[in-house]
Amino acid sequence: MKAQKAELFELISSEGWAFAKVDDWELEWWADEMWLLESVWSPIDARAYLTFLVDPAIEDWQHRKKGERVLSVEVSPSKPADRFSTSGSFVMSLNQGWQKELPKFLKHLSLLRDQSQET
Image 1: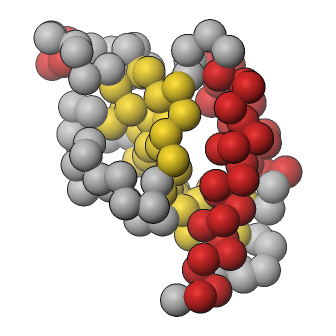
Image 2 (image 1 turned 90 degrees about the vertical axis):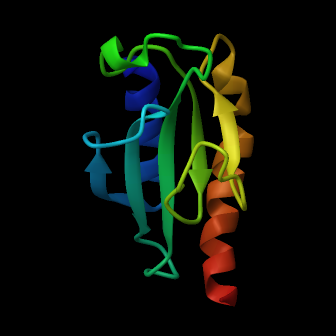
Image 3 (image 1 turned 90 degrees about the horizontal axis):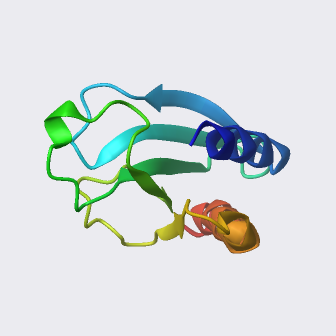
């Protein structure tokens, strides 16, 4: 999980996004960590959220340690209110072969930036 986060951090930075805030406490069981991203490319005010999602099949979520049982990452235009908030989002698995999905993931992140100009 640490390797995936490090690679995502580097890629997102190289795609014109800065990390405005990282939430990793007082989150619901389904979210391990949330990153608020702000565009440093035009439009500067564009925002997106990255949420690291916990395996929904976990039974003993109260004793799960940070970073354990994280299955996927979601990029969305707004902060997810619950694990079913998928409007305008893209979810990418972090299991084996996850890097094959990176181009789609980065494309969706770019689309979120472009859509912010339309609103």
